[in-house]
Amino acid sequence: MFGKLILITILTFTFIANKCGEKAGEGEVAKRGYAASQPVLEALEKYNREAGKYPDTWVKLVPQYLKELPKDGNDLHYSYLYNESKNVYTLEFSYDGSGIIGITECTYRSNTKAWSCNGKV
Image (cartoon, rainbow, N blue to C red; front, side, top):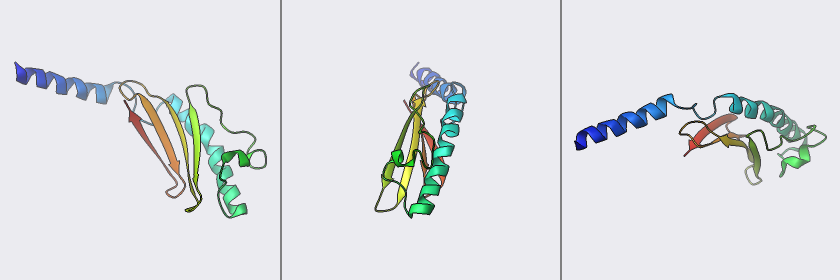
């Protein structure tokens, strides 16, 4: 009996993890997050080329480098964090994931020039 319960539990979690919901960083909401972030990434790089460093707050991008910052809403929340001593930043958007994922956070790091996403239950 105990063995069947363990097997059912394992199969259930495997099904949920593989079939329910999207992977972190995929889907329509994530696509909107990437699209809204792209102009910010371009503005940050332009600012860095001209100033020799990234801004300590992304508000400094407006209006010279960027018309406006992405606004929280439409299921997305944005944040920017700058590390002055290393002259690196992270740009992040988060949203309610689907299925078992819960909250999804997608983070772009200037030192790797890459996105990474993870889901948190």
